[in-house]
Length: 494
Ligand code: ADP
Image (cartoon, rainbow, N blue to C red; front, side, top):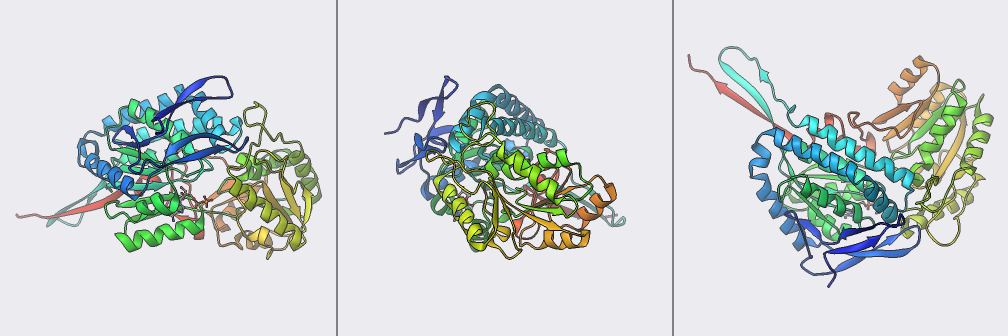
């Protein structure tokens, strides 16, 4: 049977040990069925390794471990213990940054340039969570001298967390950070196409001193292991990042099983708006980052560009030039901006949408096809002459495909921007602070980036309006999803 750890040679010449088992109770173990599945390198289409596959019976074991761990001093004891562990974890991630970045680029196909950024953000987020551990507070409520009232913020308990394949390591940190900060415990399932970096992270979690059972990480598929998590009777809260369709399924399963609390970070079709007075050079950078960073596999990608008429021609031609000069290809070359799409399925979906766009009558300003025939590479693609009812304007493509539309007035573009079932993010590019704030106030989305894009900070909350999600990750808001308020009201005797 498959060893629980296999040597993998990275393109930098270094060989590391990759765990392949399920991480339960601080040990890597085989799944009960001993079944394994392959993970593929999207840039070469070759198998990297097999990993053990979790099913419902394995999720049960992991939940028992998490449940035992929750009823230990971890949850109720001195928060400084959790602080120490989180600080140590962020340090270990920095020590292992190169290996983690290479694993991520290998398994997801993204460029090293992107994966290095992911690792840095991951370490920063765990460090930020370390600081929260002893700052979780309740309050005293005055209601006259007949009673004494106070509230506490208590950890919710065993959590289930399901993450996607576009930022495997970073999404694991957004999930595990608040669990560790608040004293919860968890069973986290990675996406089936990108299991490797989280298993490597598990070795660091153990080394950092996280007690056994607090963090359990399983590799597996959505309909089996994922569904077992969302419907598990002992899981008190499920956190999910992924597609809106799957989010809906998870929320239903949560309601039907035990009404576990649900937070969802879902899809988007985010508008990126350029006004006549914008700084052209800077704006082009942010349009590029908005849609081509991480090969467009970003839930908050700025996939609908709206440009005011006075600057439309300049922006369109400069943006086209910028897109055509991007380096695409081998993720491990230092200057590669765009690596491969994460999977064959994703490649097919993107190419299907490009086809739909052409059939709908939109014009291809640049790109519009696959690059090469080995590895899942797609050329940066810009569509012009689009209508609001075009599928490529309404539906999330999750790839390096963007539409560009001309507008005249502020009111018009606010209407266009808000004409979506989603509400994850938006970009506003202008040198007029009044316009920036007034437009930001009127846009229906959880994040607005002004003169920047895809710009994250551990203390700034992120999450969706409308069908883009429920709840917030990062910042103080993330802690709300992992704690519940207990109110104690005491009648006083005189
Ligand atoms: P995609 O279809 O692009 O892979 P998903 O949103 O379906 O995007 O996948 C994100 C995560 O959700 C993955 O970890 C996947 O395994 C998981 N998932 C998919 N279907 C389900 C499901 N029915 N229940 C729970 N998790 C699921």
